[in-house]
Length: 153
Image 1 (cartoon, rainbow, N blue to C red):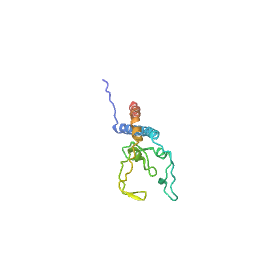
Image 2 (image 1 turned 60 degrees about the vertical axis):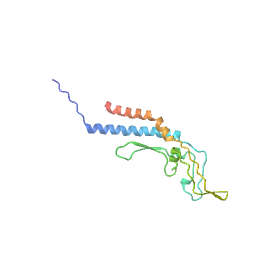
Image 3 (image 1 turned 60 degrees about the horizontal axis):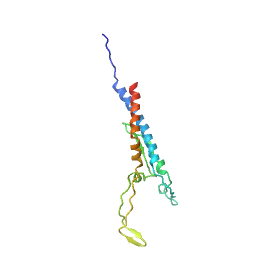
C-alpha cells in the first residue's frame, strides 16, 4: 500500500503569496498612475511668482500631471499608493473633488464693500477616479496572473 503525503509549509506559501500580491499591486498602481497622468487636466497659463515669492505661488502648465506617482506602501501589510499633488501642486484635491461656493467675508468692488460677494465653486474634474475605474479590470488581471504564477510552482 502506497502512502501519499503532501507537505505543506504554511509560512513559506504565505510569504510567496504576499510577495506576489505586493509586486502585483505595485504594477497595477503604476498602470493607474499612467492613466491618471493621461486624464489630468493641463492648464494653458503660466504664472510667475513675485520677486522673493515661494515656488508654490507660481504655476506652470503640466505641474499636476508631473506630480502623479506610484509608490510602494510603507506599511507592513504592503500594497501600493498612487499620489497626486504635493507641496507645490497642493491643488490636486481641489481639481479632483471640486470646491463649494463660499461666501467671502468682505470684498471691495469699485471702492465699496460688497458683503454679498461669493466665491465661484470649482467644478470637480476627477482624473484619479476615472483612472481607477478604467483600470479596474486590468488590476484584477495583474493580481490573478501573479497569484497563478506562484500557485503553479
